Length: 296
Image (tube, rainbow, N blue to C red; front, top):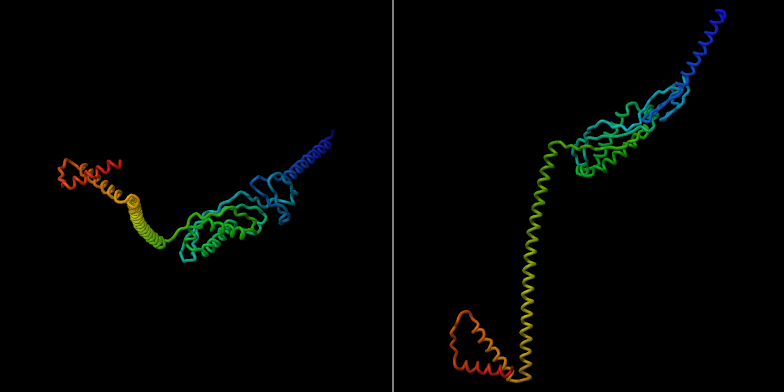
């Protein structure tokens, strides 16, 4: 083989090799593997051409190129503090934090330059506006409602930027020292008032219970007297009926019974007593015993 033939063969092989390398470069430039946590914004001749999602994607080499690699992971803005005035003219300092993620990177990269700064400014304005609608007590007690309102307002404001606000948090609501002192005085006064009210209610309840006890005792005493009176009336009625039916004998029997009961009471007294009884009384007791013995 001549020298020219060898040189021609080498030149041909070099051309084939360069062609193969060129094809490999084209293939490599045309294949784009996008990570799961990112999206690629592709431009052609300086204009938006496509948005590549996670996985294997193909573009036209030398015409298309990846202009922006955008992370779609959730992001957290640095904690921001802003002053706001409530509807009852109280100055508060609110610490907020916002979480967001980019859903449409083509809107984010072409419509806004500093995403974090724009969202922070938007949040600050919305927080001031929402707190200005509420009293201080409402800001502290209805924090969940305030967070929901702020989140909804921020979502509406950043919708054109292809951003989704996933969470908004109010970390703290701080007051100036003068307002804190005033609130502390008010709290102490309220506690003192509640203590006085509680004491007054306790005294009133005690008086009511004492009155109820006295009323109950009076009712029970009246009931006992009524029962006693009814018993005496019944006994009198029985005696009256007996006298009406049996005449003077029934009356004498009742008198004799009372005499014997009185004698038994004297005999059952404490200690030993010496009882002087007139002779007429002895005769009466004797008659009473005889009458009771005869009745039995």
